[in-house]
Amino acid sequence: MDITPYLDSFPLPAKRGILSDVNKEETDKTIKEVMRAPDKVALQLVERLIDPGSQGNDIQARHLLHAMSVRIPDYDRREGTGLRSKFCLALAKTLSDKRPDRVKAFIIRQLQLCGGEEVISQVGEFLTVPGIADDAAQALIAIGKKSAGQFRNALPRVRNDLLLYSNALHGLAQLADESSKDIFIEALKNNEDECRLLGLWGLTQLADVSTLPLFLEADLKGKGYSRIKSASYCMQFAEKIQKKDAIKIYQHLINTRTLPEEKYLREIAESHLK
Image 1 (cartoon, rainbow, N blue to C red):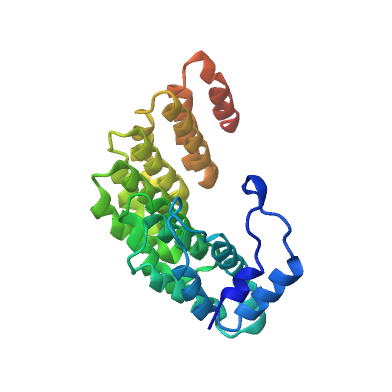
Image 2 (image 1 turned 90 degrees about the vertical axis):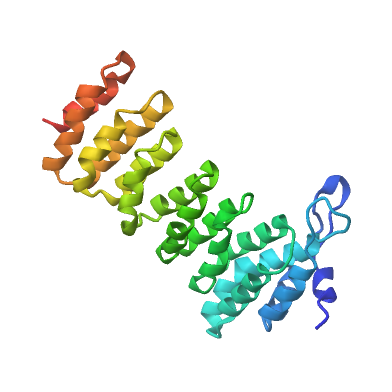
């Protein structure tokens, strides 16, 4: 299959690097044609991707691959032929090949748009790779709760890297992963404010009243921005649980937010006790 004619329907940058003169009729026609064999086209497009800054031009290939990623879920729903899954598996397969990290990151960002459970394990491998882990996390979060196991598996391998560790914690908190309660509790003991806040956020997401004593104890450690953000989590936690338990949080805020600039927090907490 020669994909060159498909690429030719997509524009190249004109002056000042701005894309112009897009022929929507031609590009729509191309997308419709490549959907006949999206997995095969995807493999060829990936071969044309280059590391940004390298000699060469892959703008049209990136354009077409992105357009396919955006539209293929809808095509799959209408046609019901498994197009999306075939396309995503083909893209995920290329992640195991020797390619520049920034090319792999681009591929993963396309999987964020259309990927499903079929690519979870392939994308999850990059949660431990600096420079790509954030893209992998966003893709897995977009796929949903079934990807939580990838974040849990990555944690032991990135424990000594603050950025990667925080990235994995963030994913678990965003997914409100109930199996990660102990992980969030452990994060409360971390000396880094960022990790501790992620632990608080994770417990806020779960809203498990059994964790309240540890949650409120960790809240006391916050300084500056961390103290402000922690108070926000206290409020969110309180809104998710029964009033008899929420009272403990409101009373805690009244007792601990004693600075003049924290008066508004005390007033909010007091209003919930009436």
